Image (cartoon, rainbow over all chains, first blue to last red; front, side):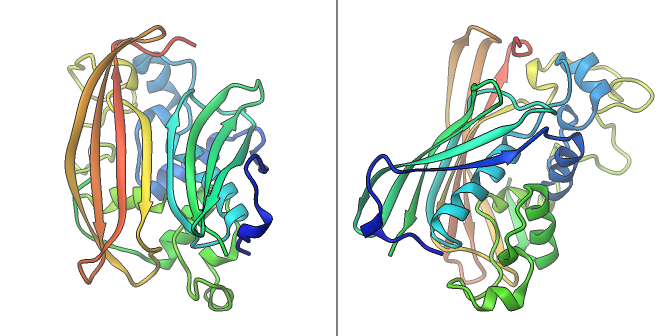
Length: 135
Length: 163
């Protein structure tokens, strides 16, 4: 379902829970599908002993992918024209993430959105923007 | 990731959608997809990143017969490990941006051409000196038309990011 410009106004928000208690298996699935086998995401021994982190952590692109799910659920399939993010904090196994899109403006058939994903402690793990065609 | 041939396939899209916990039928059910505005199965917005699978030299994938920096018996299988900062050899992903000129799906065959972007440095409170580098990837379809423009920023840290 696509959005209708006449029903949108600046400040409108849409929020989804992206994941609760992120599992290492989900991270492994992302590694397999995306082809990014960096051991810091799946190899606890390497990550602790060589990379120097307390545990494996999620691919930024896994968080971006799940955040993209929130966006397409909001704006509709095949409607995005732009989507960009900064990864501001690492995401760890066990994290629970919520993501919110906020309408910045609507003009010429395009809605501009701010996008933010936070963890269970309220820390921002991803912040960015998206643009989508609206009816 | 420079790629000569990135064939987009339905099963790959299904696996990718599962990996981001997206059960939207448009990613695996062709009959359902026909009834939607898109008219066919399409790829999720960040799917282009999985072109890594089709990059023959992608450095974050183990290669047959070559040393791999992940663990086997020891924490890393690279015999003489050079210090490579806080990404553990791969660096960290700082930013990713996509511009969609059209939405791709099964049957499309893309090429990916990589153009170097800017590099810059910053002093980080939690990880020492940060070196950022940008790459721009243009994904073109089988007709040579631009389908997706991607801009990625990677960062190498002096030491692991403080937690």
